Image (cartoon, rainbow, N blue to C red; front, top):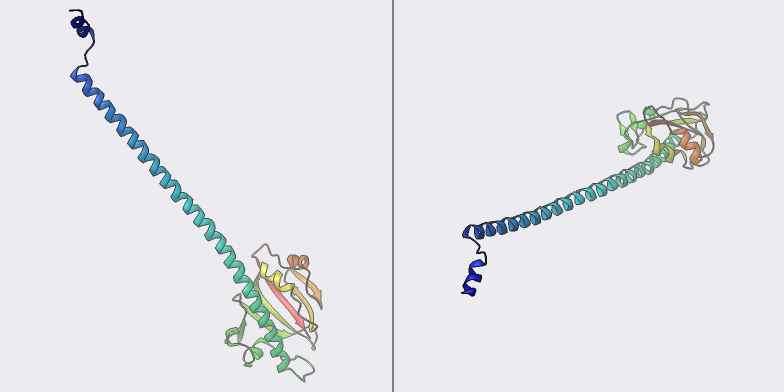
Length: 207
């Protein structure tokens, strides 16, 4: 009798309670799965963002390297052109007492320069602008002037040793320049800075 009473005293879970418990378990399970998927999705998005950032950094670094290498190649190309123009002028005026009558068209149409430098009766430099050639301040010298050279490339060009035939080199930002030598890096930096448009006109005078 007592055992029966004890069994009757133990609360029995109703069908509704069991059903609610199962629903609760399922809801918790779904919540955990949703949280797991959200975490995985978040990790994937974070990974994609990191990949994009790394790609952008690499691309920016490559662009800087490419531009630097490209400018360096143009400076070297320009130096070759400058030597070619000196040779052309000296060849054309060999045996002459002065450079009277010398101009850009005379040199451009002489057939003494590489074809890539010539555009009709004008001479072009690697930075896609004009070079002019004319008699110097005295009849015994001549000048080569290059327009619109980028500042960094100007600095590189003005520090190049051009040998004993050099009389003077200057820019539109430093009309005095230096005589019979290359500029120091500090001198070139000052002579090759133009806050207005960032490009420089360079003039070399040669015997």
